[in-house]
Image (cartoon, rainbow, N blue to C red; front, side):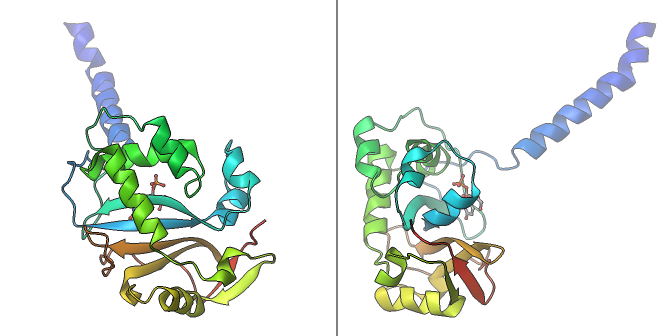
Length: 216
Ligand code: U2P
């Protein structure tokens, strides 16, 4: 009994530590499939990803991709649900069909587990929605073939995108940068995949002028 009492502070410290690391590791509770407000279609500027991220992803970075599909994220007006319950796996045929626009098998599987499971659509329905929303966006020619680094005003990039896609709303497009470098364009869509305004927590993270690494 006395030994147990002596160990009490140690046990209490261990319990506190465990509780703290569990919270730090995953502060987002599991979402519920199908319960969300809208979607964010996230387009990644592949040259930036390939220049800055350590990856074993030969396919994406061995080829001259420009904007690739990062994901279609079920989103709430604040925050987003993730890692919803599902035992479904992404069929190989779906992966192969997706690779031309989302050129990483690892990313496809990750996006399904983290976001797709929350769509409530099942893997086929989710990736069909992702494909449909990606293909509906017209990327202006200027950004498809970019042999040299391009420095461009954020306002110009936004207006080019809006001009090429008149249905998009200017409050439905947000840019994401790392320093001056463009990483992503995020486009907000309602649950039927029509353009809508982004939630207030989705903010532009680029300065007035930004840099696109070349497509090679
Ligand atoms: O921004 C860093 C990563 O956080 C996840 N993210 C971000 C914003 C948002 O609205 N929804 C969202 O999921 C993304 O994580 P990933 O899907 O890449 O694991 C994003 O890359």
